[in-house]
Length: 191
Image 1 (cartoon, rainbow, N blue to C red):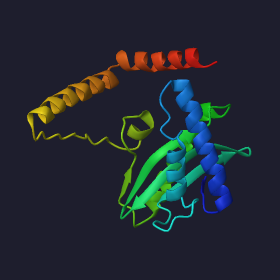
Image 2: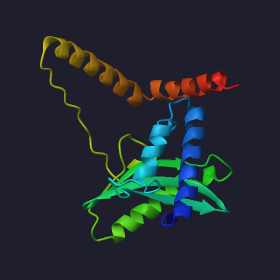
Image 3: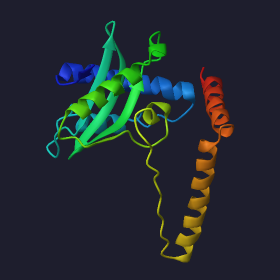
């Protein structure tokens, strides 16, 4: 497990991150938020790979390499006493059954615990098994405030949409069906 420091390690890990995320999105039938050139340039900027006068690197890129290949990556940001585990990727290859993503997050957790300056490790939104194995989830709440009749209609519609999305995501029946449907539509749309 390495926290990328050199430009060469950073480039290799960043390329692996993009490739792994792209493959996962295709297989799952979900949008890849990192596929646009704008998103890639933004990540390059916050990783310090693209010269920018306005900012220095604000993200760290961790990666796990085995047998000469990068098997997992994690983008993390540190602010004050908190490390934010922003986004991860794993290679969907012969070592996937060995959970390279879990190995990498375990190492990041160990590093965070050993650093007296870190009080919180934020594993981000979404309830995933690898997150709940390490920490108790903190329930989040959305707040919306309407300032007009039109805003009130929009707020109510958005509230209903989010409630439906939450119900589907938390359903032991519906969520697996959604994931299977995404995977099926992805395989049908691929040439």
